[in-house]
Image (tube, rainbow, N blue to C red; front, top):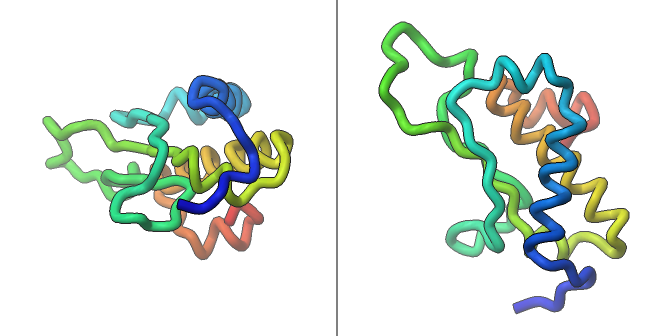
Amino acid sequence: MAAVPVEMSRERFEDLVGEALDEVPAELLKVMDNVVIVVEDDPPDGEDLLGLYEGTALTERGWDYAGVLPDRITIFRNPTLRVCDTETDVIDEVAITVVHEIAHHFGIDDHRLHELGWG
């Protein structure tokens, strides 16, 4: 396993995710539907991801969308810590990742996110 440049407890990292969510406009949070946000240490299958959105974007939900498990936004601690040099970098990267994954919930793809500077 690669060395982690920034040491940070899981609890502190989860607090940063919560702080990033606090910065999301309340109007957006109110329209998020059937989604949970969790922190995991590592992505599945050794993938190199900072975050992952799993579910059906709001823009793709039709009349038959009912009775499904919540969408899931996962923020991955270890990969985030590996790409950051300071705690300030971690704070910034967590905020970007949270916004990026929430945007997927709203149907915004990676290409558009990169254009908007949230890649």
